[in-house]
Image 1 (spheres, helix red, strand yellow):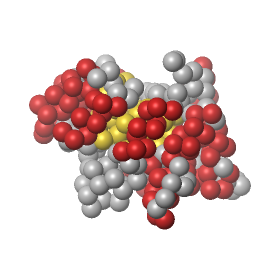
Image 2 (image 1 turned 90 degrees about the vertical axis):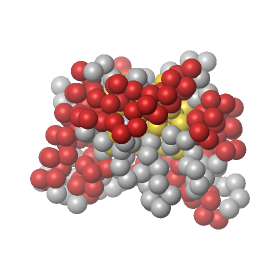
Image 3 (image 1 turned 135 degrees about the vertical axis):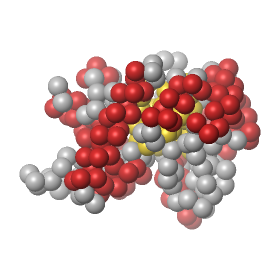
Length: 272
């Protein structure tokens, strides 16, 4: 089945991948089955999300194996399976056959993914994973920092896509550190351009947010971090989870999807 998504691409806006991991985090805090990340995935798809993103971690701290099976069985939108480059995860992906895969770094002690995947230092391993996953029918993306060496290595590994880690920029935005924001945004811009020049499809994500619901942005404050990254014309997809789920606590999950999509459209229109 072909999924049309929200049709935001007609507005030249990035596609929106909604990460449902933190719905599972909330469920797992008390055990049981509620709230269901699979039901959340259905809701965000109905609201117009283009892609459903999830990360099956080695320690299963949020998404679980049965979630993955149910997502594959029931969700009509493309699935973006985030995973570490391990034999276990590659085998699960080969069985699941998601439309998209994003290979990420993973450390047991981290709270969230703290940096980009080291591609240049394990090029043969990443190249092998890209071949295996392409044979399973998945479009592979590598989650990396805006480092020219890593971007060039991603192209050499045969990955068709990269997702640039926006965490440092997002942290600078929360801190309202104008100098750091400008520096990190420039790094992202140059990284995206380099990726495009190498024939890669370029995505972005991690930590991006909106202004709080009901709060009017003061004239002397920057636009949202989502707006500032979505405005970069090389960004084909945004993958957002924690801030979108947090936003949903105030406005509901469907409205949160619409709010992030609207911000991306506004950013692209403003940048023309």
